[in-house]
Length: 495
Image 1 (tube, rainbow, N blue to C red):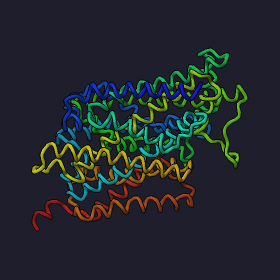
Image 2 (image 1 turned 60 degrees about the vertical axis):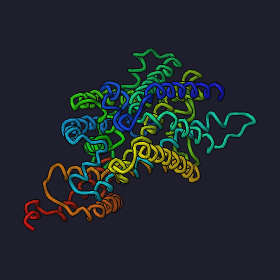
Image 3 (image 1 turned 60 degrees about the horizontal axis):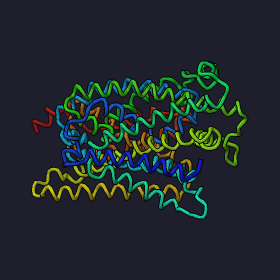
Image 4 (image 1 turned 45 degrees about the vertical axis):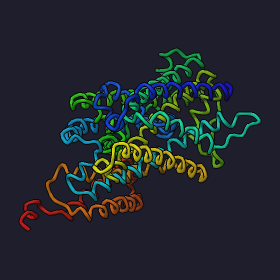
């Protein structure tokens, strides 16, 4: 498959996104941008959220890592179900009752302005680095397999990234959430098709029938789901509890995931969306893991060498791209590129809108500036939106300059440290009625990740390895810190 043909297909894909953006952004205003005029259909939001949850990192890393962790990732995903139930029953009713645009406005109501800014800061930090890391991974694959293959034409990585960021700006700049609801639905469709058709491509490139492939998969060493060695990071209860709190924090306490949920007309539709999304997410992740096992079974069947580094370690993130683009044929290669593009941009494009929302409402409080005209507010909103696009561009180029695969893994670990304080803040605010000095809360939230990191260094000395429960530990430390510096409301009222 030629690089020109792949590029043409990607261009047509983005043409579809731009068409959707044009249709949905006509006669748009601030209400359209922030909450989609409160008219988003729950089924479109539910399906579109798949793309937000399954990034380009997931698309490549989950199948590739099956050789190391088998299907243990499914333990984490099963925990998501409980986490999403908590979101539907606890968090969404709270957000709808308060009629929020930014969920961190709750922190201002409960604690004060400093706490609201602190929560927003942790979200902005985590989502900026995370989105940049995901885009860097996808842009690197597209650069290597497309732009670097053009003969007599050198297209620098910075130029290809600039084009990608510019395209994202074009279809998110005006319509905001209303546009993203439908572009994410479009992209989630291609993401799911990418996984399903990749599985079909593997089966068609062998003499296996579908039942044979299922039998090989179920009897392989890759298909083990449950692990009960408590010393390991794959221990069931670590993964399951980690999944519960990852879902609560990275969906329920995340402006990026919640903003589309708040764009529906009523709470009942928002809850219905979460229930159907959680079930679909489990099914799609099972397909991702099955794809990973089939990739390795296909590699063994055909005697294809695995990509390794100088130390002889398997480069798991290159297994899927290598087989799809070099061994499985033109159709599989095209499916892979489009699926990767969909997975990456559906999780990254919405970040521009939600980062803008958090900065506009939580940090600058522009929604409260009654002296500003609507035209001026729109100008500031557009300026912030473009500013975050430039910031993502800079971060991606920094990652490329460092040129370290480990940076992507680090980005994912950062989420555990940045979302933990949010878990502690929201759970303390909802569960307890105690009052905390708003001025001291930022210090508590900064100290919590530092203490968590120190524990992650010390615990292996006791033969315990921290895994996905790091968010829970971080949240507990924040919760305890808030309690230690809190007082009963009644006591304060007498003073």
